[in-house]
Image (tube, rainbow, N blue to C red; front, side):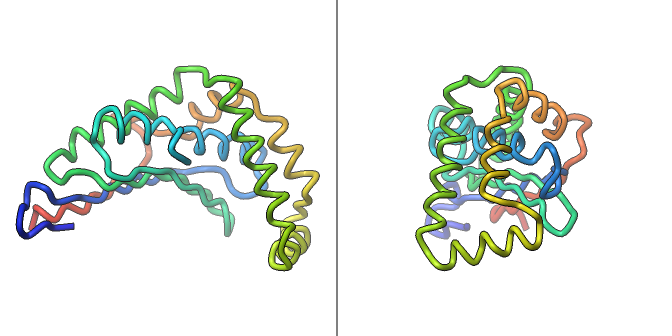
Length: 184
């Protein structure tokens, strides 16, 4: 977004997109866990390091979509427009960290507990019950299979899928889209 009064304070948008598993794929739950640790909340690598420690993102997070037989993962960030290259570099450093550092058992357990809580919370509404029926009919997914999927995730499995799906900056398959208000 362009700050007309002070252009040097403008923010740019970074969208990094790369291939991921489809819904129902054997890697789905490990990838969802990896994505949550990488950029899913305020405890994530991206938020803590790129946003808070390095001050290179106002907002940063990850996304996952395995619907329609096409898996896609991504990182999106709102960054200082005059520090885009630094921000992209910091994002890729955290991606490399996911690939080479074993995440803690506690981090994986936190994600599992959160997923189970969200599943239970969904059943507090009629909409949640309808959604569960739809998932069962469309994809064969039951609450039990959902819990089993997350229970099978380990820190080693997270590192394995990180190396399988997260792109290398220099030679990886990804799309990097930058929306910079300072460029015409």
